[in-house]
Image (cartoon, rainbow, N blue to C red; front, side, top):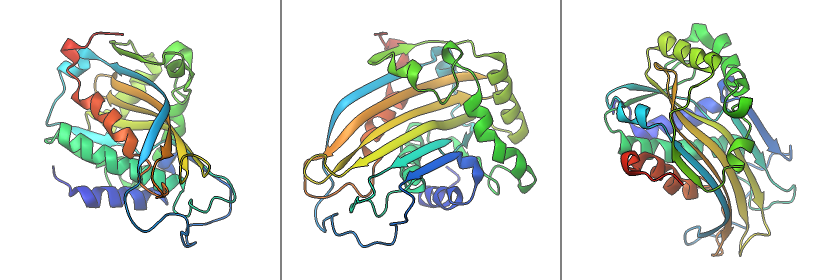
Length: 277
């Protein structure tokens, strides 16, 4: 790897504060609690969570997987559409925000991707990194353009309904992408000299102080990897669950940790021996 992993995620966090490429970022309520002292988080022990109400969908393209170039350049997008919801009186939510969620997801994604594909160079798809300053206007619009593209059943890429309807399904499938989407991916690959794109399309997290012993949250994500040069989906996972505390340490950080094992399964599955179900 050409980049230090800790500096990579730190750069991503700093960049998402200022760059419109991060897409739609909603936090509720509006009042800022980021500097408030955390009186509910506890001072000792680790955050322990129980996962319930889980729904998932996982899809691998065996053709694209079989020809993965282990030394290729991967363009890394921040989460394109993030919603961070919390009650107004949430005392454990002082560090919770859309940008904090995206940074925490990047921490997990970056670590696991480096483990699965150690020779791949990962470059941030933001201005000043893989994207030149002259492309700031183009990249500002790219998130909404990607999300508006039609995909499964003619629905937009930010529509979770196709995956919710396929709850519990794991399958290999070589999809024929709509021409507009394939062409868009080809254009990004040619413009920036990259082979693959990793794109968290949607990330919705809602804090609930009444869950478990010390609060919890609901998590929903569509995470995807694309072979931009060939205009193909490599893999996609939809993950939704409720995380409730079983210890008296509130979940005021590391919200993406339960998703880590689910993302790793996408990277670590032997697709050639996967039984569709």
